[in-house]
Length: 106
Image (cartoon, rainbow, N blue to C red; front, side, top):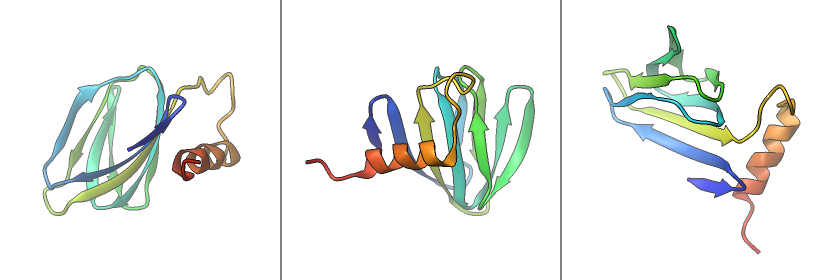
């Protein structure tokens, strides 16, 4: 995990069948499944996420994730402390955040 100014970049490696219990947090969460497959419940709905699928979870929304039993899941998640209706989230903004998070410390 890399964290700076309330923004965090996390790589999750989940064994088959691993579950993140339902939870919510006060920040927006964006992510991409790099490998494997699982099911994400978001509020009242759910969907299967395969390798290459991206997702967005608004602040305060209850969600969980269950890795498929067939193979491990690897996900890259970014949490950002912003309200998307106040500061638009663009590829440029997200790239800038990730660059700041991963830059070597001076």
